[in-house]
Amino acid sequence: MTAVTGHDIPRAARPGARAWGQLILAEMRSVMRDTAGLIIPIGMPSLLLITQGAVASQEILPGMDGRSVYEIYIMPLMLVMVVALVGVVNMPSFLAAYRRQGLLKRLAATPANPSMVLVAQVVTSLAQTLVGVALALGISAAMFGVVGPASLAATVGVFGLVCASMYALGMVVAAISPTPNAAVAIGLASFFGVAAVGGMFGGAQNLPGPVAEFGRWLPYGAGVEAMQHAWIGEAIPWQPIAALAAAVVVGTVCAISLFRWSR
Amino acid sequence: MPEVMGAERDRWHARRLTRLRSVVRMMDIAVEVKGLTREYRHKTALNGVDLSIATGETVGILGSNGAGKSTLVETIAGLRRPSAGSVRVFGLDPWRDRARVRGALGVQLQEAQLHSDLTVAENIRLHRSFYREGERPEELMEKLGLVASARVRAQHLSGGQAQRLSVAVALVGRPRIVILDELTTGLDPEGRRDIWRVIELMQEREATVLLVSHSMDEVERLCDRVVMLDRGRVAIEGTPADLVTRTGSENLEDAFLRVRERTAERRAS
Image (cartoon, rainbow over all chains, first blue to last red; front, side, top):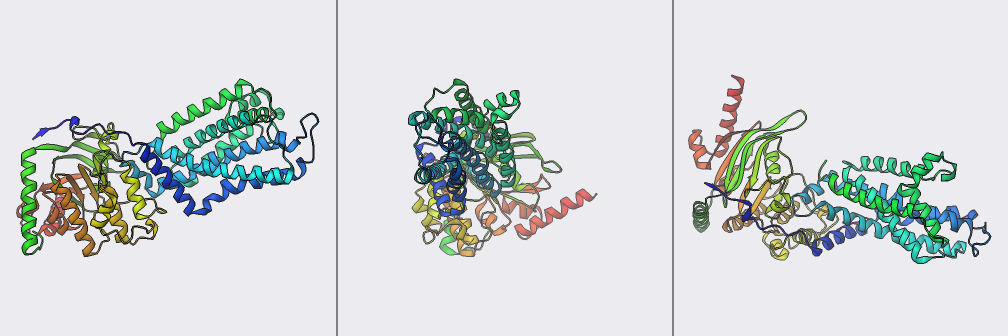
């Protein structure tokens, strides 16, 4: 017998837009048919904002066009927290469940690649988060008279970058977690790690100097700082933007290279 | 030889002849395994396996539970990395050149699952979208008796229907090499026949088939050659008829049991 060479196999075209679309559609359908998974991304933002808004919305800050403490400090922080919780803790557990069930192993035997699987998860989760955030903002506007960001374009841009950085971190968790329990454990550890040094517990100003400076370069601290500046229409410092962009690049590269199809 | 009657037997012979001719004509190696060893933390699943499979050939992998059958086919599919030795699929390393090799493979795995919240048709269409060319999902569902359950979610399928779906997903990309692990486990006789017919269609298209099975009649009907694994090594290989003759047995099942006994005796001595 004579061995044939690989030229006999045509160079496989990477799965095209149709495959990406089908995989995203498959994830969307799965989510819509198993509605329990919608509770956290859609319900949590409203719950967090309503519980914080009752008192903080009464304290109007002078010189801020009628905006309250709730709007200037709490809403940006809560929005970052919601995206971090869903992106870093909630989303990876679904992918880890697929890994445990053997669904990823099945996909591994097809031309589908890790990027497709990760992006389908992120797009599906992000769509749910955006619905949840929109709902929460609507409720906040109706209940607490929120004026809205001074610079809508900057706020939307920064929020997009915050989402991208948190989901990039979440993709790393999703890429390496062998089981859903491990995903929740790694996700929670990552979330509390970046949130604690980012000032979630009592503000970054109360942290020791080097810790606060370190936290400023991680997605949570950088996200809160950038969101607050954007909300009140101030110029956004370059550091948090650079930190968020770096998190997107590093997280995405790490997730794709560390991705495991099976446990 | 399986118990087939009259016209069906003639068709079976004609198909076999066509395939043998194509194998002789092409004489190309589709899969080449040399000294393949795969070790896990506390176990050696494969220990120096050598195997060559020609293009268009159908090879049955037999062995007791834990003999290394699934590890062998998963390594050939590029899902596991060899600890030592090499695997080539059309001359390519399925681990390093996985993107290229997977476009030519159709794999049905023993434990792998499908999207449980998607329907049969949605699962097949999803997998079809990964390949540039392939079967029409509707035609495949018809061939495999899945039309009635096209709108049923995978999680609500019976074991047999789920197995048919698993095979459909493996074949939807019209693969040049088909790897089928426990092909008809859990299927009723009608389901087995349906799947066998689809495999025979693949064979007529000169697809190379690796079939892991515990079903001797299935192996006798579908396979040109049989490889028996025992504790991670090739215990014996040959055509089904050849194995029966060489072991002095009455049928393939008997041959399988004798080979097992002999290898156990050899180990004991």
